[in-house]
Image 1: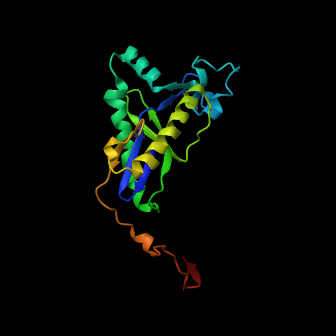
Image 2: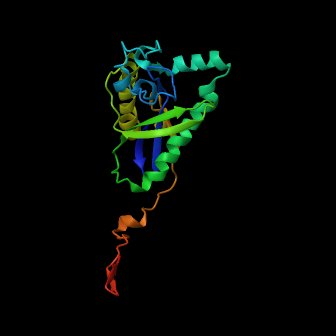
Image 3: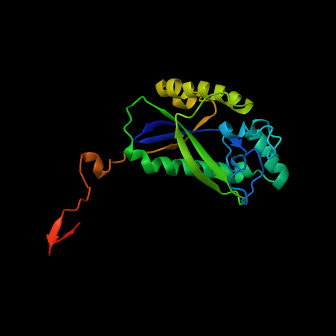
Length: 211
């Protein structure tokens, strides 16, 4: 995700997500094996050579095309386009809207975010966490290919698009503007220096102290 303005909020979604897998099949009976429950590449890469590894997926990652092809073959319909894509947009927009009044952002600045989402058996998407300034290292063949185009396309948005008069004609690569607010959001009351902390005072009564 790319935020080029916080107030009014302007959000961009990159059209090429990637999908992480654990190094082993999920098993609720074994909560101690991190290769079953964690999909982070920093964890999964150490599973090679252990007895728990069951997935033959290189780097424990798939690009979007691989996942769409698998879902199409498995279920007979385009699960990403028909169900998951719109959900991911809604999660991102709702999440950023909920915190936009807490950010101090100067005009001309931008921020990249990495959204970690989980998909359940019914194709419902759940937000796990949001990372600011996500890692851009070449951890796998999937991320190496993706990072190179993401960084190049980001420049198209924050430089070319930002300075263009006819923005509709600017090539923004795979970045899609999914939300552009029409109004300024007021800052919450605590941003005006109010102290709303509730503190108790000692009361002495019948030689007993109460707080």
